[in-house]
Length: 577
Image (cartoon, rainbow, N blue to C red):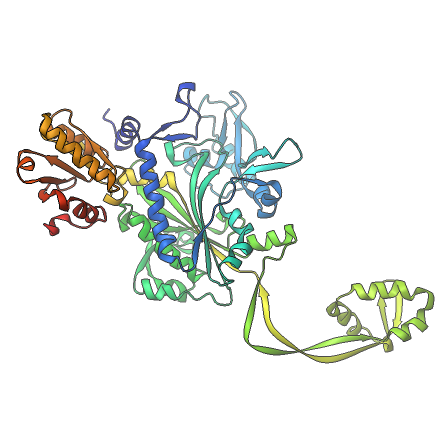
C-alpha cells in the first residue's frame, strides 16, 4: 500500500530534523515530542510572525509579559480549573486500558459527543455496545479526570501547585501591574508566549495533541461600556470571515457562510466587536503561514460545548490531509469572569476606575439615627444595638426602615420608627469602578508547525518540495560550488560566511551533483540557492535559484544580500534584476 501524505510528512520530519517522539531510546512517551534543529527554527519563525501580527503591529496598546509555569493551587481554584478542567475517562474492565470517553464515542459510534455529561456518554456506550478497541473487553468506571499536572512548591506537601494549562491566568493575576505600567489606559492587550502542560488522557494525532506544548495567547481588556472597535472599520470594512455559527449548526447546516465585518456586529452574530477584530487578525496570520482562505473557517461552539469562563467561543479550523478540519486557535469572549474570580478569591481590588468628563449629581436617601433617643430608650442594651446598626449598610437599613410602619424590627430589637429619619442628599459622582471585559485569541505553536508543514508539502517529479513562505523557512539560503575544486570551494565558503555575518541562516553543500543538492535544499524548504560557477570567478556574479519556480537569475555578489532580503519578505526577486 502506497504511503499517504501524512506518512511521507512524518518520515521527512524525522529524517530531516523537524520533530520526533521524545525519549525514543526508552520507548517514547505519548504526548511528548522533541523539535529538531529545523523544527525549532520553524517554530521560532512562526512565533515571531505571531508577534508581528498581534504585538508589533499593535504595540501602542498590546504588550508582552512572562509569568511562571507553576502557580499555587489557589490560582486555579479561582480560575475554575480545579473544578472544570476535566475530560471524561473510561476504563476497560479487562485490560485496564483507559480512553477519553467522548472521543471513543465519536470514533466508534459516529456521534459528536463533545460537551456530553457522563450519563449521556454511558447511555450511548451501553446502547451501541461499545467495547475496548484494544482487547474487546467491556468498558466501565466512567468518571471525570482533571487535566492539571500537580506538583508541590518547596518541601511542604500542603503547598500544592500546578503546571499551568494556559498562560492566561498569569496575565489576569498581573493585570493591575501592567495596567499601571501602561498609564492606566484601556483598551489594553497583554500577550504571553510560553510552555503549558495538560495531562491528556490519550493523546494522539502525532504532534497535533501534546501533553506539553507552547501556547501564544492574548488577553485583551476593554471597557464593556465602550465595546466599539474603531480598528475593525479602519482595517477590515467590507472584508469577510467564513463562519459556521451555532444557530446554523442547530439547523443541521455544515457549511460556513461569509459575513462582512460590520454585519457580524450589527446582526449580533458575534457578541464583542473586539473579538471580531482579533478573528480577522488571526485569519491573516494563519493565511501568512501558507494557508489559503478557502482552507480555513471559524466554527462557533454550541452552548453546551463552551468552557466555564466563556460566553461565546469560535474555533479557527484549518483543513489538513490526514484528519480534515482541525482546530488551530480558539477565540473566546471571557467577559469579566477571570478578573472577578481573582478579586473574589484574593481579596484584592483589580477593578478599574473610570473618571467622568463631568461629575454627575446623584440624589440618594440616607437614614439618620437618633442615637441620643435610642440611648434613653434602650439604656443597658444600647451598645449591642449600635454595633448591629453600624454594621448595616445604608442601603440595607433604608430598606428595613421604609418597609416598616410604626416599629422597625432589627435582630431581637423592636425600635420605634420615630428614632429613624430618612432624608434626601445630593452626592457628586466623579467616576465609577468596573471590571474590564476580555476577549482572547489563543494558538498552539506546535500544532501550527504541523499545519504549516502539511500545507507546504508538495511532490514534484518524485521530489519533495516544502513550499514554505520564505520568511518562515528555517534555512533561508543554500550555497553551492558548482564543482568540488579549490577555487570554487574557496569562493563559495567566502560567500557562505559573508551571508552568515549579515544575519542569514545558511547551509553550505558541495556533496554530489548540483541537482541532488537542489533536491536536498528543496526538501527542507530552503527558498533560495546560490551557485558559484565559472562566471563567478570571472566577474563576481552568482546565480540565485528560486525554490518554487526553479527560475534562476544572475546577480552581483555585492547586491546579493539586498535581493535576498527582499525575497525573504515574499517579494518577487526577479523584479529587481
